[in-house]
Image 1 (cartoon, rainbow, N blue to C red):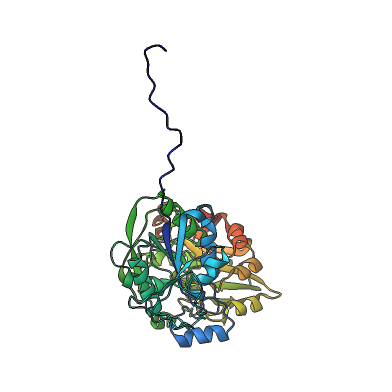
Image 2 (cartoon, one colour):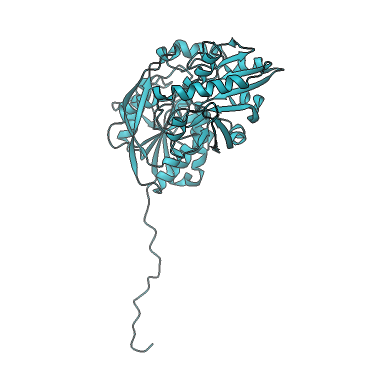
Amino acid sequence: MAGVQLPPQPSVLAPPKFMPKKKLGLIVNPIAGIGGRVGLHGSDGIDVQERALALGAVPESNLRAAGALARLDAIREEVEILTCPGEMGESAARGCGFIPELVVPASYPTANGVESGLGISRQTASPNVEAQPGATTAQDTIEAVEAMRRLGVDLLLFAGGDGTARDICCAAGDGLTALGIPAGVKIHSAVFAVNAQGAGDLAASYLRGSIPRTREAEVVDIDEESFRQGIISTRLFGYLTIPAEPRLLQGAKAPSRASEQESQAGIAARVAAQMEEDKLYILGPGTTTRAIAKKLGLAKTLIGVDVVFRGKIIAADANEQELLRLLEGRKGEIIVTPVGGQGCLFGRGNQQLSASVIKKVGKENIVVVATPDKIHALAGRPFWVDTGDREADWMLAGYVRVITGYRDSAVYRIASS
């Protein structure tokens, strides 16, 4: 067009602005959850860890960490992983195809004597150490967190339970965003994703900027020794900053209220009236299932899994292998109640009810009991499960009838993971 002068066009397009990789910290507690399936209700203490291994326990926290990291494949080129040697994170990262940068705590026993004035050493090659169950300590975790905070990680993923969350909280300070991959026995804190896959999805979204907001969440812990004796003493330890995405996060455990006793009594009367003579009844932990045992005139362990047959407890505080043995050649039924405030049916504090036990019993023989208060507290959020076995989790998904009183019941959804 005459009289119009176009601006000059560059002969070469300007290169895209360089975007630095996001730094993802990863810490795995190798012994987290080791006491669950064998009925030890925790993993704190060398003696408990040794007992768990002697009973055939298999560490699973690295499998959980790998399940989370597998969900980061889409942002693999956008992320740099900083982790600890061997079973404290390196094994899971390398198993998922990442080449991590190693952060070695000063207290960590290395074959080549690595140490530094900062209490860390950053390497790309392994220092040739293996953190076997029981070999690492809370101090290793604390020093690793302090190091990663100084190195400016954008998000710290950690695999463990409430004890691990407590150690992370101790060293996190201000400005560090963290997220738990559930791998422990007792997971009452609100800093964990609902499962390993959810942790990976949430981490990927946060690192990409799809979830810009964060919030503070409670870290709580209990005295394991008292817990094993049926005494639940929970205290608030502190707060961690976590990505704010309620859909993928579990809530903090809420205790049962004294006002629920009437509802529990009604539930107990109904379940007791429906029991058959030649069927095994596997009672999960909780005050509602304890009310059922009380109706039968039996003394149930509050935090254990007990087995009732023909009106008697034939196994108290049973572990996974004992349950599988008792189910051989017998029909069985699992009676379970969701964790208060969380809605988890399997995978939180009842790991003895493993995927193998659940599959052997069958979904049709799982009875869910819950007081109306417990269901109302979920505010419409579904029940959920985290057995560590995707096939079992999908089998349990769908709708289930929940016994809420002597004549009352409700239909409620179990979310697929």
